[in-house]
Image 1 (tube, rainbow, N blue to C red):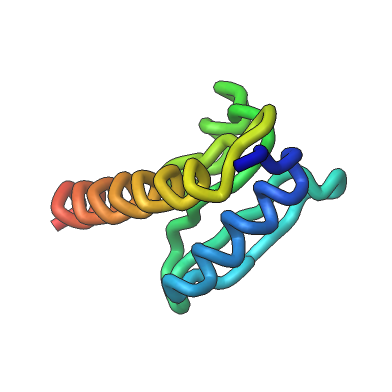
Image 2: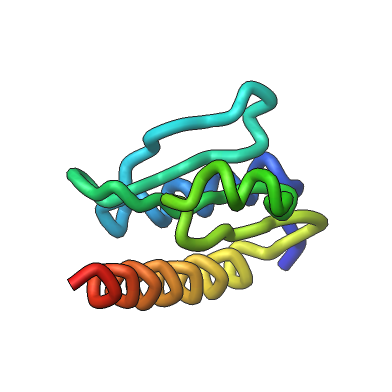
Length: 101
């Protein structure tokens, strides 16, 4: 199976996350980064074609994890990456909730 270019891979990842109950809360101006959160949640999961910089991490601590899709990625690879990102998101959200309790 052939891989998807970054824009199509990001769109597929967003659809898969929306199917898990996440909603798009923001997009950057270039359209290469999408931020999603569960309804009524302050934390976000980022889907992009590039990693965040240390400055971006410091400015947006609400982003618990990023799913970075660059290069040619198959739909099966994207599904696996979404599953892994959801697991990291949930673990980090629980860790932060327990730290503030």
